[in-house]
Amino acid sequence: MLIFNKQYRDEEKIISALAKKIKKSKTIKGHHKINQEIYELDNLVIDLDVTTYTLSVSSNNKKIIDLNCQYDTYDRLQQVRYDWFSYLLDLARKRCIKNFEKDEKNNEKLKKGQKILKDTDKIKQRQAVLKNALDTINQL
Image 1 (cartoon, rainbow, N blue to C red):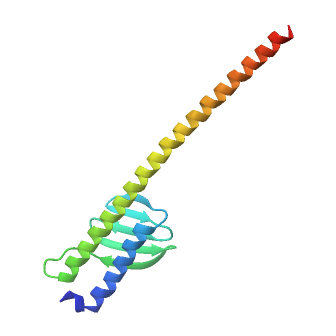
Image 2 (image 1 turned 90 degrees about the vertical axis):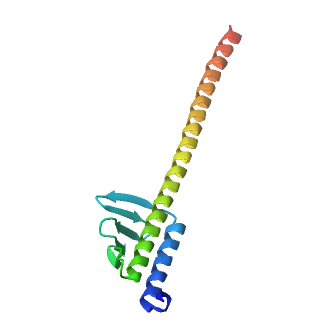
């Protein structure tokens, strides 16, 4: 009956708020260190240590929460924390991959646009040369 545990409910609210932040943040950047994945959201830093299963959240270099999410067979709350940790890790990874793919598509479009501009400039230069040649011929 974990639902009646106040600590469980409070932690669940925090995890839900973090998941919502990950989903709705305007920017997300993922950094990898040895055994850690660090995700920087708009004004929040989520540090997920995959060896100790520790979730740390900070804002402006001020710790908000440290949560031990290591799996324990005999403690139901720790099992749920482990599931939350895995969920947040998966959610953040997918969001970063989605942003990366979106940036790649935008870069491809940008390169195509730059190529079109370059080709247009070449055409304008050729037209100017041809116009000068025509003017010179007409003057003779």
